[in-house]
Length: 258
Image (cartoon, rainbow, N blue to C red; front, side):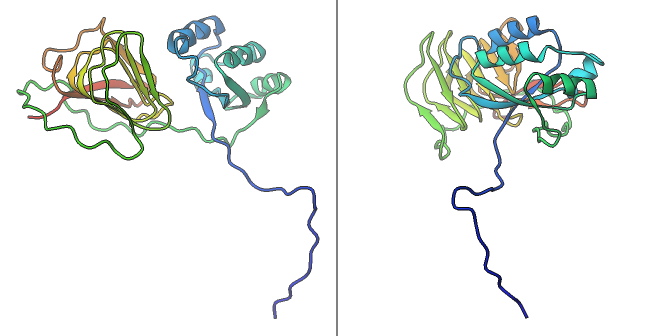
């Protein structure tokens, strides 16, 4: 027979399990000067990209590239806070690295989960030479997407935080479109397009006329300094990320239509 016993609960507090969404910094080098330069290149013109997001510093990539490296965790935290990141924890380090991180005020979070890229899919010819048919009319934007109806001029920037971005007009040179999800441009794309801005490696970029200054998915980018092949330049195309077995991810550009 079941027995119910009366209990007493504290009147001033309760303890509950909680889950905190974290940004993971996959540290690949202990060279903080170079890290500062690359952070400035990536986020220097996007002061609102992070919004006091808590971050865990993952040292696995560092220990693969630089065995037994000892980064300056105090300086690293100062650098991250300049970009409105709040470093909380460290994972994947050696005993010595973890001890240094704890001394710098971080906590040890070995069980923190970090999103990884999916296994590599079979490579499909990225630049088919087949003629491209006229694209179909633009589909209705998916629910929750940020929709921009007006052309974006040089110097303008749009960021779809936590969702897809749909642009129904031209993205001119010098303009920048950013999304945590997919980017759809139903017009010429001539500026910068950054999809999967917070590490979503499954994000894609679609455009009716692909001629960007820069394309990027989950931090892997390609600039106009490397010209697109004639088979996709100025044509309807999509950009996707092909994960590599050793982290050598590649951007693949496919013509749309056949």
